[in-house]
Length: 541
Image: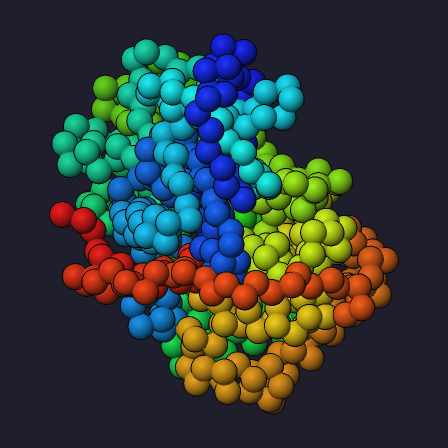
């Protein structure tokens, strides 16, 4: 959910003055980050109260606008918590999961929920919540505000493609693809977009009887894919398989060479081996999906579409004719994140997560994990004294335009930032214990074969994962990689020492969260998005 910072009218502010609500934290955004933050906060701080605001009518952020055949690209760790390479939650299951999370918030009595509402503040810094349907305004008082700074934009969240299109052209967001395929109205499909959305649309078409010859794929630029079953074989081999990610970081002479080694090992893939893709956003697929993508023969690589007329497609680097008469062709809008941000976040050089009485959520401090990043921020907030500089010194993430590019180096920078953050948290051992015990952490022992002994064996045994990770960090910081001479933007920054950390006095009150009364599921399904909610009902009837 994006930042909501609209000015409120004087009249509305006056009307709200007699109707106020109070809480310790005002959280703007009921997506993955906001929910995971609240879940850990309520568990760790028995006195914390929350007012949660979101413009959508249900929790889940951009997932509420997702297409019906979407699935997680990363493992869900469902039911019995075991990692499975094939365990990918559907969009509906994710939304149902978030409903249960929010219901658990309600049950503890410490969260007030304002859905279908916009947040705003006046010139004096007073906070207001306005119901979108009724225009009812509520004044809110809080000690801290938590802003989820996300600009994720999916096709169904805007009106039509982001370029001029002739009225004779049939176009639809990928959400509507099942209806159009079932109708058999169209003989040709033109998929616009090469990321997660475009890839999923291609897979849906191929798996629902559309021949590759009936598909044109417009990709503005080639991308790297992470191949899920190219890295991990299964539950018992996860630790051993993950070594393949770390070994090249120790052995290869450059980050570029390391990434190409990943390709040789089947961990990453590209569609056109004659060119080196400039983009890697972490889009994760399996081998079967990769084979499907490679079967598409009509791939247009001429940059972004600038307009579509009645007889041709105009792109940044050229023009191509329509592949079939307009009446027989459907253009599928799969374009997302058009604002050039880093996973929906625009992180300035001077960005601060902890900034006085405001907490700015957004940057990932754990590789490709919004939920674990949010849980750690909640832990730091609830455990350490109110010293923003001290708290920020424990967190490493990309800042500025240079470090926020979607290239292959971003994979290595995320790994570096995560290692540095964990080293910083290590100055207070209970913090690392929190991470290892958190369900939101994919590497947590609870998800993998042999549990904690298996984790220790992988870190300190023959695989020497911990030692190799340290060696990678050392190489980055010594400038040993010729294609990384800036230490990913944090050169010279020192890790905090135990004496630098100030711990809050622990409350004697026991938290009432999570509630003792557990929901009884009709079938087992869960996600590792929130630490306290593991199994929920399947799709509601």
